[in-house]
Length: 160
Image 1 (cartoon, rainbow, N blue to C red):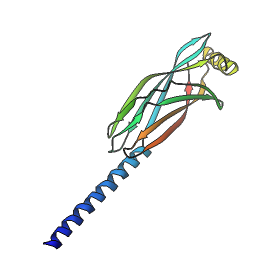
Image 2 (cartoon, rainbow, N blue to C red; image 1 turned 90 degrees about the vertical axis):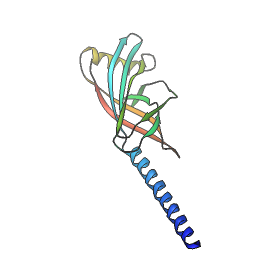
Image 3 (cartoon, rainbow, N blue to C red; image 1 turned 135 degrees about the vertical axis):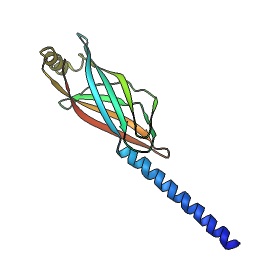
Image 4 (spheres, rainbow, N blue to C red; image 1 turned 180 degrees about the vertical axis):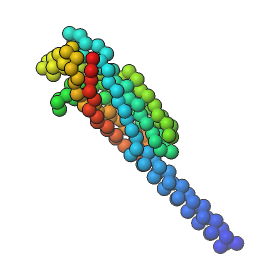
């Protein structure tokens, strides 16, 4: 009887270890395969500067669901930071094999402080010339046992 209890205990412990390893493997793979597709639109051009609207489609092509923090957006033009979004303390759950669309993240690019860059951007847009901006989407992925910083950068051509 004592041997039977040891066998059952060993089997349960082994199954538990296998389940934990598989869970962490799925979560780690899900974090690595998170895809972010940003879209950027001109919301407003004024004497105060330029306001851009960013929509981000977050895709999870894996069988592990997870939570991440509301993305922070930063925009650079010719390696110069020109604007960033507000920091929002909100969690977003992405289901397994699912996606979430975050709409209406606004980034203001004020004229003051970036006069030459903003003038170049506004002039190009008013002349219907495309402008290439680098959009950085920064967030934190909550894997359950730990949180991992995640950053995605992509060049986007902005047109008026």
